[in-house]
Length: 390
Image 1 (cartoon, rainbow, N blue to C red):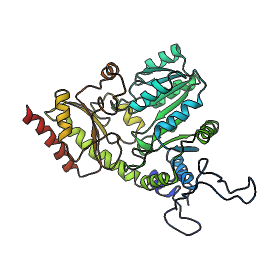
Image 2 (spheres, rainbow, N blue to C red):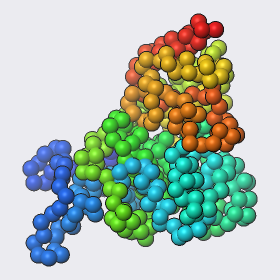
Image 3 (cartoon, rainbow, N blue to C red):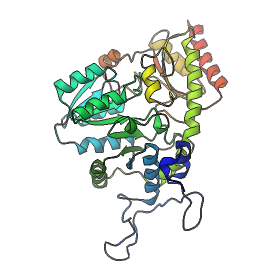
Image 4 (cartoon, one colour):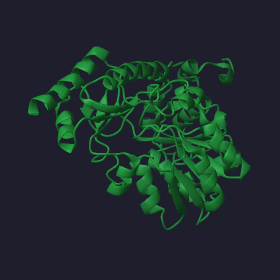
């Protein structure tokens, strides 16, 4: 097989880590559903001794993930938040962490509850490079944590510029790349030190696995996280690793289909009489559109929009959709819809939510790969339900 770095990502997702089984020739790699491994002599083994530490199925997935982000190392865990937890444990107590103000609700909850007594956090608008520079000088962080596009406001941070600032001041930079997947954005190539993903979302893509991962070129940081993972134990199971390996094979075609549908729906919503405004990086009206075009290879499948009205109208709209499933999470082949203020970001205090723009008439779409006409008809029927109620 050709070296993976010379392959297009659409080829990597299928072949890296997906090589046929050497023993049987099976085109699909087997699941090594085992807890332990036989040793030929005490301490002498083939690289595997206990599945909490290593597992051949998990190794295949980690090899695949590293290749997608063009990283030297990858590590997977049982959830995105468990990976973030390991990373937080890797920092010395009292570490100052500069974080984007509009991050996933679970990330905000983890940082402000579990780790509030371990580290010091400052939340700012990282889309404003001058504000980042000011915070770096005044707050003096050791870590910068970015999420771009953000969840749920889809704000775009210039990864290259912020990472340049980080390198200048010897700050570690982390980017949550969940919304874009490695297919549309690769932060390590833009200067980030570490990339994290919730594999639950686009990487797996089928809403049947929960998982997390990180990719990095730093051997020392990888070793630190591996030691913590081995000691604390939030590893991903062999079966879930196999499921992600299966799901990731279609990442390239899924992301293209997600983007195609999302772009058409975003443009349609932007001209709809029942919509106040639409946020989608692919629209020229998005304030971060130029940066998105520069650092992303596509605009993804996530849309945020404001329906005309308030909580009453939003609830009625959400109760009337049929194809768009009212559920948390995102990135599956099926379309999902949710209300951030009540659902995914309920743990963020109301005053902070409102300052970020997460209002009661805000609705988030994870646009799936169904027929576009069926999706638009489903949304139109929900809009009509609001009209009739009025």
